[in-house]
Image 1 (cartoon, rainbow, N blue to C red):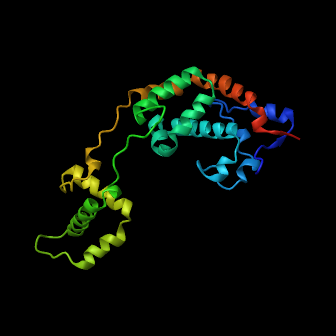
Image 2: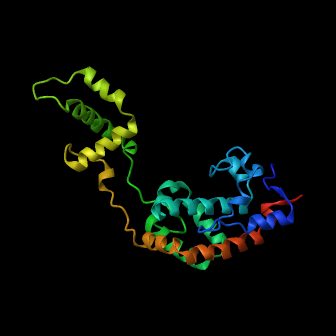
Image 3: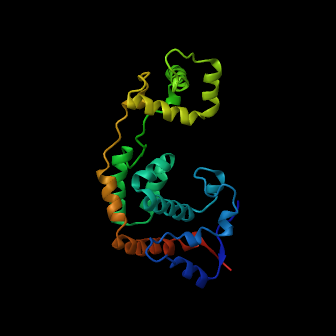
Length: 240
């Protein structure tokens, strides 16, 4: 099995372990974005065999870095949307940092957005693709609707018109246009469950964002993430 721990001197490790960008959270990225890790195929794909070759501490820092990146870019809800299949790994990473306030606030926001912090499952609408019979009928109606745009009532819609719409729009675009048409009242719903979805409230997620963005939280990240790195130094480097 590949040893993904980089070869470093003790002094080099201590320097990397203490590194943090000004005005940012400590992430430990400087111990992950190294050739010993990044040369492993699939190292950055959660669930990939290559990722599982990383040590537990490396996987924790990688997920923590991703949480920081996602929340800083678009908030807690963006993290949940983009990492919907890997939320349990995020919960585990937060637990591993031994940061009580982070654990409490993250868990509260996760329960709001994913139902249960212990077994999170992102609350999302049922995709059209999961109701193929209904979507197939609605898709035909949508394509005809799009092909008729700009035509007068007496102008026919030809097979060529329909084929042109098919060629112009990829499937994801057709799904989006259909939902927009139904919500705007241009088309009637075909009964798909996507229109029954009510998104969860965002009070806890927004409270998490406010706390997370603060300078105090960034300073606290140095304390807890650095302590995690030192506790797990044997998993994060090999002596040269």
